[in-house]
Length: 440
Ligand SMILES: Nc1ncnc2c1ncn2[C@@H]1O[C@H](COP(=O)(O)OP(=O)(O)O)[C@@H](O)[C@H]1O
Ligand SMILES: [Mg+2]
Image (cartoon, rainbow, N blue to C red; front, side, top):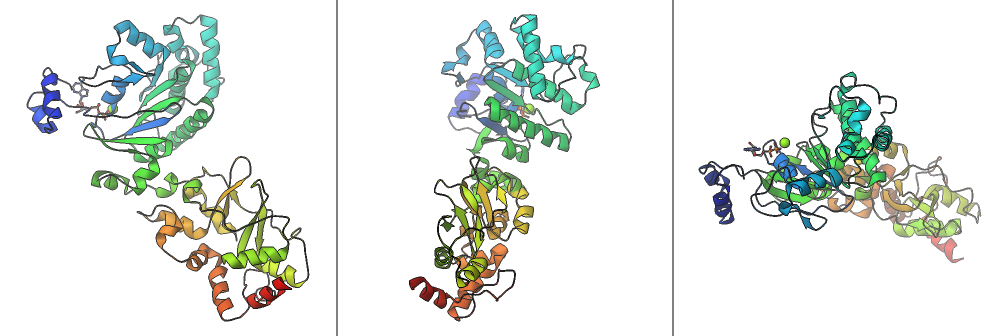
């Protein structure tokens, strides 16, 4: 609360009075009843319009502002009880801050700017310059150490701000609209770089923004503030798919869902999969049973080998081939679970198979049929195809492969059941014939 009668204001608000009533006391209620926990290593985003209380909130986290009521705990210590010197050492040892307008010293070199936090802490010159040099290289500013900020672009200046926070080597970094002053493309670059750095550094970051897309891109969790109160706290997907109220729903309406949702959030279980030691006949039966025109070939340790198509396998079965070797398409489209849905469309368009979602150990963790991608675009969907309530056959059909549905229809008509092969129809194996073959 800002204002002389803030204690009275807290009483009124505790009684459930509206913020407007507080105004009569000449008190501004900037942050009201906001509670959350930030986990170690998390990027926690606080998102809200201008005036919603973001800066006030973040200043309470590093002790620059004392809350009128409530507590701020860091590693179990309530910092609202700290002395001035206690707060000072908190700010130099535990928390660093990156500001919107960089807050660099114009006459100091880039290197000295980056070393500033350590200088305040009394770290010897050589040591702090070495650390500053290292953190500048982390943000891609090697070679710029001797320049002054005015010789750098805005994006580069903010990198210096980030390098300064990194050099201070605090576990916690607070970033207040740190990228808001940058041009869109540079801003995206900075976001990417922050995410990349975070992979290796694992800082606890509280990032403030008024930009929902930025919030969704960066935040492990997002706290949406409205008029000083929490409108919702959740992951980007939770907020997108399950907004807590109309305010949040309106906010997320314009979000580019394809940038927020990732491969892992829209993928489906990989069914069916085939073991590379199985023969073509088994592979064919597996596909038929699951009514899919293709299947992924996966080792027992879940490592992805490739994929097979019903048409090719059917042909092989009729030719008496008994090994899958040589029938497996190893050159299939693979995507990482963290890839944004927006970046999947081109690959999906080129692939006759659902996209294979493969983790860092090359294990198949999921698949993405094209229809699933399309479903993910629809607001209100939970990003998976099953929310569209289409049947399996429809799903596969819309996936662009077209052949599962046709295959079902064709089987019913006891007609050739495949059209995916290079020579349509020529290699069709009527289901009945195969069943018979399977028993032989
Ligand atoms: N030092 C202050 N004195 C009085 N009112 C303030 C002060 N700082 C912020 N406010 C008010 O508190 C509210 C929240 O401001 P702020 O935390 O800066 O929001 P944001 O960072 O989300 O734009 C606003 O109404 C603002 O005018
Ligand atoms: Mg602000």
